[in-house]
Image 1 (cartoon, rainbow, N blue to C red):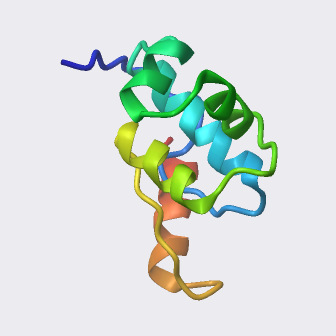
Image 2 (image 1 turned 60 degrees about the horizontal axis):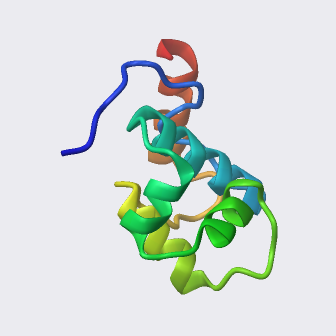
Length: 98
């Protein structure tokens, strides 16, 4: 069973402008679950080096591995048209209601 912590430093929904945005969300999810990087890597089926590169926004990581780690950490990736009203509303809600 995964431990959940109540603190979260990042919004639950945010636009992704760089790989580092995804990596920061991965790190925050891992920390909310009180997982060490080696335990999270094992849970996700990837190496510690790969998870570290992802969390730090480094390139040279395949999309399949990004999706694998997101799923392993209980995260999902959504793609929508830029400026999508519904998603912008969710982002704005996270900012105002944090």
